[in-house]
Length: 167
Image (cartoon, rainbow, N blue to C red; front, side, top):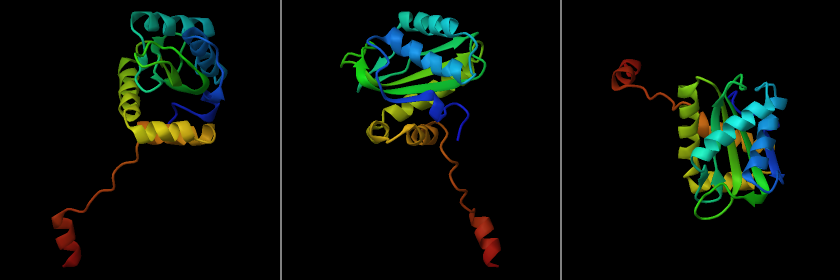
């Protein structure tokens, strides 16, 4: 399990408000409550400032608001499966799966690595369907962990190792 997300950072089938600001504020609240950020208003302001530059809604009912913030003490991923989808600017409609990436100011590499890994996973229909079907926050976290930090592929013995072992 990664240290980026935990069940305490996930809201399942929740109504977090009618607009993106309310959803971001709710997810930022989970980040602060978990001790991963020191200032709710600062984190919300930084996330909304980033949101003002470009919409973070993606096709298929997804949104990935994200920011780097001096309020954040460790890279964090908070998520919600919304009972009432909210518009994050995607052309095909509102989002029901929202992921807030909160990275410490200056953690550009960690922020981009997480954003890239999550975005790559969210283009897979089976992954998104599994998130929508997850029965609880623990199952949701397990799916996300697997996607953003997959287990290493088992090493295959080389021909030399195999030949040595059979000799």
